Length: 468
Ligand code: ADP
Ligand code: MG
Image 1 (cartoon, rainbow, N blue to C red):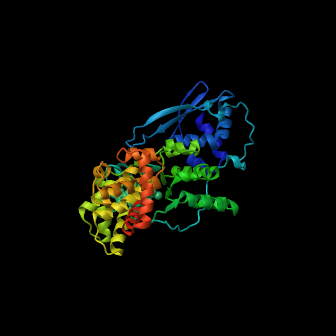
Image 2 (image 1 turned 90 degrees about the vertical axis):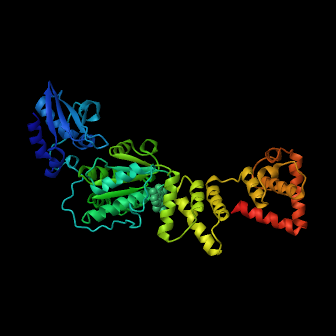
Image 3 (image 1 turned 90 degrees about the horizontal axis):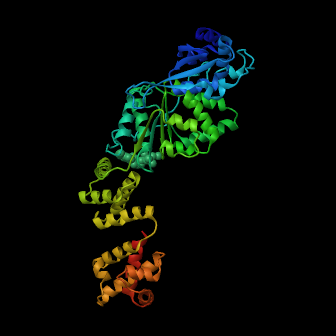
């Protein structure tokens, strides 16, 4: 039965399409009017349903009559690659296609609907710039628990692009955790090992722009063809595609084509597929075919080694305790970690200052504060007491010693100025005072800073520290 169907199909579609989509199918069994066929992957099955359902229906009806049924058996590989095949049966009557009773398509091979839209007649020989940044390599992508899975999956893909079950390889994780770096590193490594392969790195944003341009210029097909001849396609920040249905659609087709032809796709995203919003289900399901590997926040040791590596490469020496201080305080973003070290180096060389813990603290606070926004009353008390070289307990104590009273009043004044806390709340947090005391403190600071030069300097210095 199946052979007869094949003969019929072969006559009615392009040879290339027949070869790609029908030769790999194995007829498994025929019971009553249901023919079971085995297809290599779920993707394959979806593609058949999407593009060839009509011709399948026609050919099957010819053979088995009106009640013909087709059952797909999907041979799948487990995502982790150790080839544990399992099968999944999908009765095609669950899907739109073969349920319908009437077949009314004209069967001639000039019907565009029956032609594989993505068979390229004679691919031109185009040279494609890979857009890779050679500075992002595996060598300087330091390994830690936080990135071990993603990094080694990347290495595996680079060793055998398209030849592992990590296809697509999706790298996801928060801002500044190394997604772009790792994506480039894979591409760079592939180019190294397989110079003849066409590798392309592109951000999803740029991809979208190109696509929109191509639609405007009426060469959408050229756009598609361009992407279909790539061996390794790396798309950075795919979350950018959310809500962009046209681009998602074209990407879906490009993806299918590449995947089907054993080409490697590497994607990065700031979210796991399950958390992606406004991305079509069929795309999300493709994303999940391969491996999704997360980049997590690096642990302390990894942060220290990233910093040391960076300093080493820049030829800068820095005391161990400073490196550790920075690594201890910046935890969730490697870019900021590096940024803090760079600005520390810059500050010290610019002001010809030695790199001290104090300088480090100042810079780190700035980085941490930028992400946290508001200054806290605790932080204000800390800055003020550091400035007067006393500890916070002293600042909060009941003592009437003049310099301590002044420090306390300054802390209250800045708490009023830099936070949204009420007078009462400020008072209770700074040594359990009442709101009248805080109000009095604010007035005193105002008065003193207009009459006492030394005191004005205190206000200016502390203010600067709080606002760096
Ligand atoms: P993302 O794309 O996730 O926002 P990036 O790839 O741009 O992050 O990384 C931010 C910075 O951190 C880059 O300079 C990158 O080189 C560096 N970086 C991230 N992870 C590592 C790592 N494991 N080893 C060395 N540098 C890293
Ligand atoms: Mg990035």
